[in-house]
Image 1 (spheres, rainbow, N blue to C red):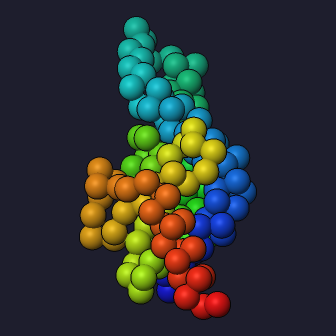
Image 2: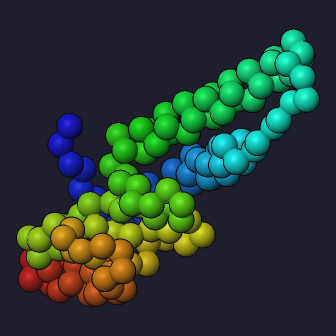
Image 3: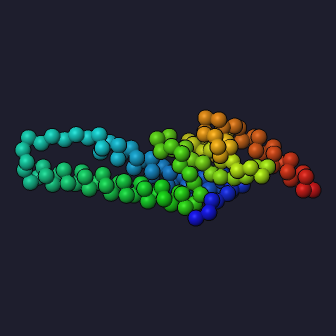
Length: 142
């Protein structure tokens, strides 16, 4: 599957469409972590206790399946999840014939930062630089 590239406007529009799915991923991630950290020790091996343990394991795996299905949907739309813990998502673009990534974090209304593909999010720069360069490119076309 080829990489998907977005303009800044397209990336911001996609962010609005994927927010509900991203929020569900966060909810599932937290529920999975809670289930994974839950330690239950039974005093006896009754049928009820064994069934309870099976239900907890079943819930854990169902939530994982749903979460990873949603993550797959995001990837097919062109989203690269850089960090599941903080839900940092990159969307590929081009700037002055170079490949870049727009950075979006849950809680941000729109994309505020970008970085070169060979850099991580810690080296990100304000999106205003991209907006300025896009405007300069448009002026050249006139």
